[in-house]
Image (tube, rainbow, N blue to C red):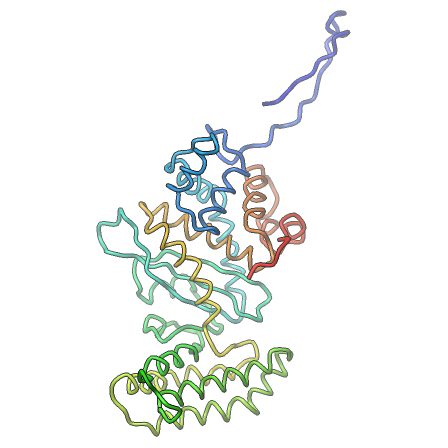
Length: 366
């Protein structure tokens, strides 16, 4: 509410004195007493702490402030639609301006989807050495390559991914394979009581050596890293694939060899630019945030709810990667975006200096 003060002496004398009243800051949602900080707290609990709405309902009830679970989810959906979606769209444009991206996908259940058993949640992230740290989640109806193709549009940079065929026909992009996935195939192919002479174990060892060698180049500039990779990593990588080509095997080991050789061209592309890395672990780690949440939430009831999950997770994970406390950032957005007039959306992105000042995390996030 807004208080208005009047002059008692003026009232007695009948003098009309105008009073200027400041505008009341708008709440994030109409017809509710929920403040920005309260909505931000429910988002923080769900998307960072992975607490589902039904457990939050019990928590708030114990505090003497009963909030039904459907109210919590409705807050998330509406604020995403009103404020966050256009901000994430702005983040996406910034992401597409980066030269190196990572991608991964995982299943996601939408309960009201009568056409399919499961949908997919896709993650697109900027690279380790990119100017901006951005993570954008997108709900897709399938695991088809049309989802990354539509999302990335005319992107012409480098894209790290696993060996999934959905990434095979993305025009204009240079695909980079993941050595961690190649290593995993050899790891799974090792017999139960393997010895140092095991062929599969040697495959794991060779991959480990490549990772260790490349790790020594982390502190170099992009240009120096490119030059050193050509000198010391390229021969080892070529030798690894020559070794793979010399092995003839069946079963799990044969699968590992075939997988590695199929990824050879994409794996060799990692030598093209010093900003590239040997694995897609950045996206693998990023999508774990959704996977851990999914174990607790199980599903989204509606498509609106699933889109809200993708939108809010994009903000939370991007905030963390830029050193922000996710709850502070969500509170900041829900406080200022409802009252935004002519301020450009770029002013609310996580790397904006004012946002950094207001929302910086006071503890280290791993």
